Length: 81
Image (cartoon, rainbow, N blue to C red; front, side):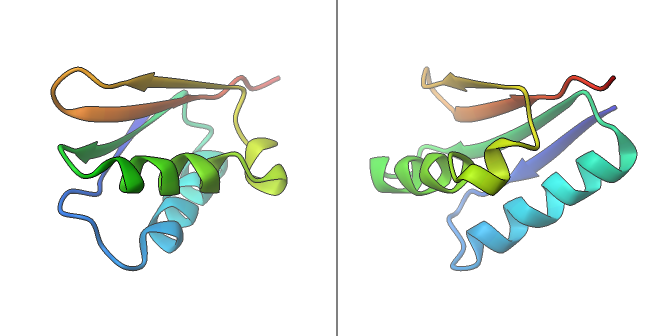
């Protein structure tokens, strides 16, 4: 299962929306979560990555992949046992 979250244009409750989609991914045992932040400022990307690198959030996913060409996206990969 692949889940998608579009954060363009940037919203003030960005961390809350990311938490919700991560919870859905864990509950549904998703394989990939795609977070699209579009052509937003570099500060939006940093805000997303800082949130995802928090210790309690980092434990939920196995790998993080970033793309910057054109439409910015962050992919979170999950590995279930």
